[in-house]
Amino acid sequence: MEYILSAELFPFDELTYPQVAALPRDTPLVLPLGWGYDHSALAARLGNSTHIGLLPALPFGWQGSSLETPMPIFNAMLRNLVGNLIEDGFTQVFALLPSGLDLAADIPTLTLPCQSLMISLPSGSEREKVVIIPIGHTEQHGCHAPLSTDTLIIKAISLGTAEAASQYATCLPVYPYGVSTHRRSFPGTFNVGGRAFEDFWLAVMDTLVGRGFDRFYLLSGHGGNCSFLVNVVKYAGERYPSIFCATAWLYLNGPKGAAALEARRASPIGGMGHACELETSFILFLRPELVHLERAVDEMNFVATPAYYMDWIEGGALIANPPWDDDTKTGAYGTGSLGTAEKGEYWLKVAIEEKVDHVMEIHEQYRQRKERRSQV
Image 1 (cartoon, rainbow, N blue to C red):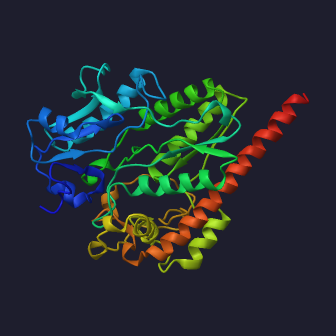
Image 2 (cartoon, helix red, strand yellow):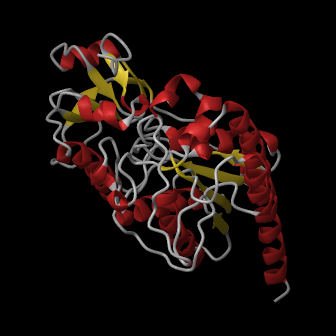
Image 3 (cartoon, helix red, strand yellow):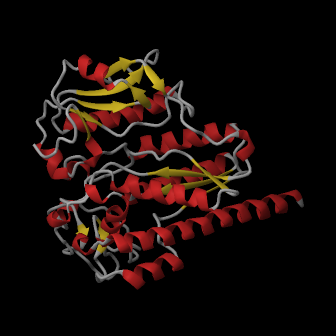
């Protein structure tokens, strides 16, 4: 079967959604908390199953991780993720925990020793830097691109930004799950849930502010996260008036980004939305082996009116959330077939430049506001 990527364990997020749809529903699926588990021991715990799907690991959030949140908040998010798979008909779904950690009783779990739970976090010497917080997602990207598309893209942009502005920014590990309100339309799509998402990221902010950090950039690779991140920014700003916390609509969204898109895109308006020319180009540059370009289906039959239409820098005055099934049969919005690695490399470069500019603006906003307050 072509969706199996190794003898026993396969990375679930490297599949396309039709491949997820084809998985036998008794395939064990495991969502690890952290890394460093013995895969042979995991296979043995699952009765030496022939094939085991390994989902993207959660890098932090639970008690005992490098970046803790209150367990009821973490449990709510994890419960939703596990529940997504159960709702999709999978019968063997487990959160994989390190020894000594207990979750809510209704979350199915496996426990194994873990050798490498701790992630690299900003140190105390980096408290004057902007903390970049990249949040991707695991969701369908048409018939040709992997579920990990949003996570791969925002990870590359965030790490590139932190490297290019290393004196001014540091970066958390990318979080691979967000909000998809169209979850049920296409297999392999997750949804943390809007309220659980907001509660979790505000709790992360609580922890970081408590450690002395005061400048933050919540950077999303998935459009469904963005409105909820605006709320997190508002809550954090109200709770901690002395910090400066910001977010933005995805990437390539300002004048520099818009000019870069216009300079290289081959599609008309409507060609860049989801699993489109832009996102496909990024993945063709970053992980070309995960793209099945021959399976790309171009879809631009979005129900468009002057104040509501789909393109990367979304146009129109109306904000709405109609069913995705109204506009796409394959989960794609746009022209994925026009993606190229060359365009992906160029757009990644400009996206990093755009985010470096944002980092410098966050510093300047923080400096000027702190100075003004001191004069009152």
